[in-house]
Image (cartoon, rainbow, N blue to C red; front, side, top):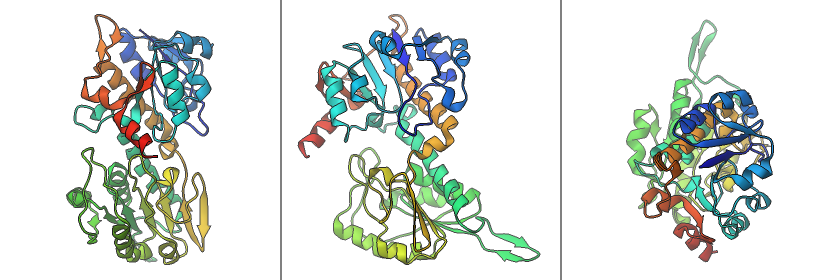
Length: 379
């Protein structure tokens, strides 16, 4: 089975889909691996690192796409490139399945079997393949580093001959994978950390990291079977904002991480809440690319509103591209290895399998994923 890894061409993408460590594991398992020339240059890896891992180097992207049994990438392909793949071949990639309808249609029409990395189920068995979680963890870390660079004070408390410097106050909204990593990072830097989440079950996790869990009574909440926070009603969101306003006002840094899978991010921090924050404060909105949690957020930009800086930068994991690439590569490699038939030297596609049933998007000329089909019906 021939697997091709093209060079990433997405705007602003600094990560790579496969690193030599994973390449070596795959080739040793019997994968015939072909990578595009320059595939690793974004993180300083030359082609020789891949050839030493057993991969071949391709100088013709179009020819390699047409010949590959499976294409592995990170950012979604263009519609035009989706049509270049061999009919019946497989694609393993991020797809943005709730938004990229034209791409999905093109993949289906081309007969591509698409394994969508965003749709990997959040189960114990699939944890090693869960790219969303691995990248979210890095995003939470980067959010704190970005905030620390932009506030006008130090994070830790310091006892100095000139006096005592108080610790920065950090308020984190959302205690999922990104939020928990943000809590851990802010605590390591010495900040006083508070965190809020609509799911009471995460209180213990927040406390275990040394942060104070903020309790706001907004009625019955919970999480989905995949561990995501359930969407709140308008009334619950209003109560939540009212309860969080004072915590935002006293914070030097606010980090928002609240997203509802497949939906526009909820607006949590209103204009009034931003106005109540001190000049010099910083908000990092990790939901900027899905609509933003903060009034005034602009995706891909930093804006200043009356002295409060709102950071809506895109591709946060890409700011630690070397580690982000390593983790994504490991997720993809684990997926391939898990279903690799060593005797037949091929990927065993079993659509009755829970993981593959969850992440297979297109197959045999049509959209087959139930979640995305239902989302389309509701448009």
